[in-house]
Image (cartoon, one colour):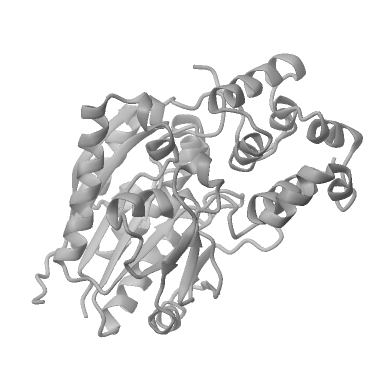
Length: 278
Length: 100
């Protein structure tokens, strides 16, 4: 079944665990955009939500770091963070092992991906789900791109992973939604936490909205590190979403640089050209 | 220099509640399982989050260690700043402090 939804969103832990540091009206405007995305996923009658995240050493470490990984389990667990710290209770989140296996087999035709029958979700997945599927009852398949431990996955490979995932989604009978979570510019978990390069973010989002492949892939990690911080390396997840549908343009539903949340809070979606009958 | 094993310990601690419990009860016995320098052992034992930051521990790993040892968000940010002031710039990794 053709892909039914493709979106992007931020995942910084402060979005949930430092909520009170932002005035209610401002934070709710962002949360509402995220909730609207959850509704769009349900309206599209998706059977599964693939979350392409940039995880932070919850499952993968430098002893064996995959460039790409996808979950292949009937359930997952999260958050890995301390529950009181994350302000999200630990729980099981349903998966779909059979569908994972079929998708992964198809993705492997184009991109080398590690499969994982065990996966602990960190804030990269739990924070978006907190708004998209707040009861954590919707089947999720996690995917990861290495944005943490250099050498990082090259940008053009992140785009190609999106392409491979699209071909896989189109090949299964289920209705697949995909959301990529991450940066854009930010300096998380440093003394500079709260620093955001809004001009850089807006330029990146303009490229993403146009789905300008050459412009999206033209960043070097040296430039990104200088202009957008190590958090900027997570543009890989947004680029993978662009790669899902090169024919589609993107729409930004929300962008607000909120220092206490330590990131330019973003929600956006591709305008998929195909309208799929339910 | 055993930054890899220092981070491996923090990675394992973040993942495994049973190891966290063991670490809280008997820190030395957990530390003995890892190939660590005297400076790293001191930073973990004190605990000195600022020194761990300067040694180059990945920020995402350190953020959770700070929470584990009971630091609030603001205390953790202040500890990193104090570390840079006391020990100098971050020595490795991709989480160095930048000018604002």
